[in-house]
Image 1 (cartoon, helix red, strand yellow):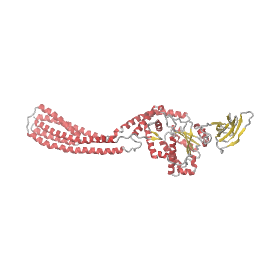
Image 2 (cartoon, helix red, strand yellow):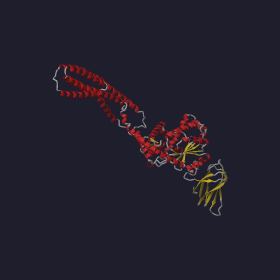
Image 3 (cartoon, rainbow, N blue to C red):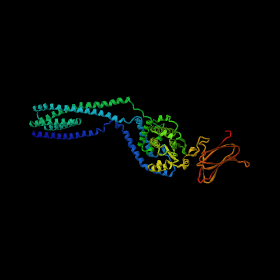
Image 4 (cartoon, rainbow, N blue to C red):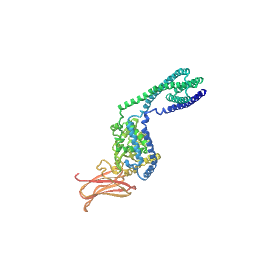
Length: 625
């Protein structure tokens, strides 16, 4: 019998060893769970951010493609810029874009669509922090529920102590016949498995209190083992059976009620959400417009998005951030209300739009020399309030100009800027400098890729020096849009990009509110030094001939006469020879009524040592007019 008790004791020692090992594992599992608990804190968030995460990965891939192919595009662009006279605009037709740019455009559209679905353009972004705060009370409730279970668990685990002692005494008093050894081994194996299962379940359901329960079971079994050794091995088997039944029964009873309070709130919370969600359907995607064009859903939308992409080197995430900031700024600045605001007309001669260039771009002129007027300068830049008003007027003017552009894929959606620096106040005027810096900052951040070319005319020497200093800090793309011309070359420089009939008279052209229009083309001729040049207007019938001409820089002699086709006709002097200087009218306009076929001959005599640029045009009208 002593040997049997020793055999029975050795298997018990093995389960105890296994249980101790399992306890260690069970203690490690809660540690892992504690590490993972911070991650599930925002349980509803991982579902929503999954899509942006995928988008970010896709954008990262696209950016890698763009960055890999970008050096090729930059090298080709640099070659074109160095070889060409002026900057050439890229196409806005999506089908003609390189594959990398197409993919960047698609990624940007996806980002914008997700933002529209979430109303990120109209609603502030701080909603996520409140969501996390709401999750924290839920977590505290769960922690309180677990603590309540833990407090209940020790109280129930103490009950087996009182039950085990009487059962042990009853087992000692009764002397049942000893069972066969084979049955003992089977019973011991089953008992070991039951002990393991019970203890493992208690450890999983009760983290720390389970250790206390195990000590109770182990203590009880040790007491029973001592009693069994004194009498016989058969009693130990019965005692162990009784203790196992007594422990397993309350453990299962306790586990069931403990699981019910946990399941009840878990099942109740989703039901509340399911009931709440049908009552509040998700709002439809918002609609956001820039310059009267929706961000998505229109062929003109692609043209707008391409502007932001080009401003950010076709990086979709950066372009998306720029668009969001632009939309936010437009709301804060009140662009829609600004369009209807009356800001006066005193600056209409300072900044104005006049004509188009040879490619059809509207031309905007900025005459900084007007600020030499002290009264005008004080009204615009004397203090912060006046500078803010000037900035509003400048933004309003730009917004109205942009609304006139054609944002179709093949349309004209950029402008040409002509900045006249003649008599400009210069950098010494702090008010003008501050306002200019503010305007440039806003234009750069919120109006990307709207300037096809920026021509600076009547540039003083100090500005050329300044431009050379900042040139190394400008990109090749930006520098390719800049053109500088001194006072003597300003008009000729403008004529490279703008036809003379489109250039205002004050800048060397023939465009004015007179009899001629932009439909009447202008002919330009270079007169060599110390030479004469004649212009003939033949006429085949009776009519009224009108013409106008100008010589850049003048300082020449001018005369006009009519020569009839008939041999016996007499030459008629229309305009006597006279010296025309810079102080005279910049344009000579004249008319002559012709009653017979002949021609009008204009003679320009250049006796200076410099070549001169001659501009002229003519047209005929019926005499009845």
